[in-house]
Image 1 (cartoon, rainbow over the protein chains, first blue to last red):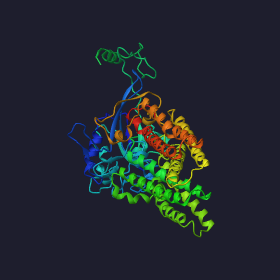
Image 2 (image 1 turned 120 degrees about the horizontal axis):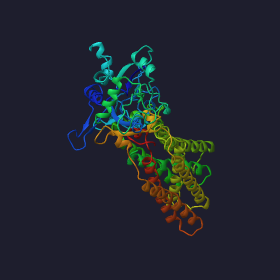
Image 3 (image 1 turned 90 degrees about the vertical axis):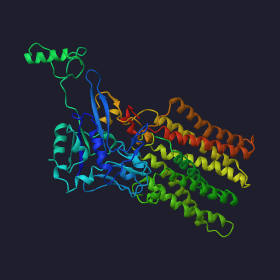
Image 4 (image 1 turned 135 degrees about the vertical axis):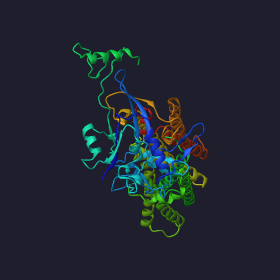
Length: 245
Length: 313
């Protein structure tokens, strides 16, 4: 079994609900608390397992804002595990989840140095390394209704941009999505073989604007400015031009 | 990378201590230092190695689990370094005892075997220290065979210079070829550093494009998603201004290699008295190599910085 997440960059709106749900669940979970440093002070900071960054991809007018949630990739070749001198970091053979045994961790930060995805954060108050557990204390909890046995981030995502499942099973929802939408690894050249995969934004029909009319820019959408359009399409184009953006 | 003083102190000082043993092990095979010098060298080597190792625990956030760090030597260079350092102590103490008994009966094969053993374990320990950094694929400035080579050569530089100092303080005579060996090691150190700085200068490896998967378009960070610093920005976000980097690299070469080499040449030409020459050469090299080690951390760019907006490391 290879449990992991598939994240759809097309539908993610960058609302941070996954990060908040993650913090809420895990701060009272097996690896909790997720310490906050001066939460009401001038520079609030703290431990988060899930962070969302925002990028602009492409150049105007063919650009797009992409929201980018990142948590532990549960890599198949996880260097964070091999470099750990104490044996606190381990990868479960049965489902591939990478975990930290906090009773063994000595807080040397070496695993965080070895992780290219910034998935590990030292809890400065507890002195141990903490990371995404893929909600291991949730997904196997038989007290929960079966449809809730998913990571908190997946459960909460309002745009359904996060999918959880077994990537070893070719018929699972995640495997199907990866197959249909060409799910990709991040930084594959480093050879960590991350389990979590990302789905690229779908090709969007570009909306023409006054300074970027239809057809401008390389790789623009499929909209045409020709004469053979239906009335509805012409009205739509006119509205799009007329409405200040 | 954020340069952590405890780690810098650990790598430089225990490197010097282990370098002393490497140099002494070789010199001893040629019957060189007097017994008093050798005993002083062994004592200094053990003290420096211990100081370094103790300092290395200061950066641990949870030192009560430090004893577990020996367990994963099959995969972790950090654990290997720890295991080798622990093996080093009994061997080094036995070797010191052999020096102590040197005037009495001493079987020659045992002497050779112990010299080789202590020298090789010291070498392997310094190599492991270098490999702790060299094995990280996430930091291209470290992920090169030059890293362990630099650690070993600079450890030998400090060891040979400190041995000259200790020999002079123990009342031994400094011969020309000892100065020449130190000079050669200084030249090797400077050359390795030159190659290293040339090697890390062109950006290479992952980019913001491969990090985000958008390899056919420009990618720019719009917002990093947090207002204050995080563990990641505090640990990996350190940036060194270019002017400061150039200045510090000059300091490394002038203090670490050029001035000590000139002092060695002055000693060789008998233009300088030996004691101030070797003492200041060691002190200057120590300062230079401390700066070198600080730069080694400060210049390292972790790939996670790509997610925080750097285009390339």
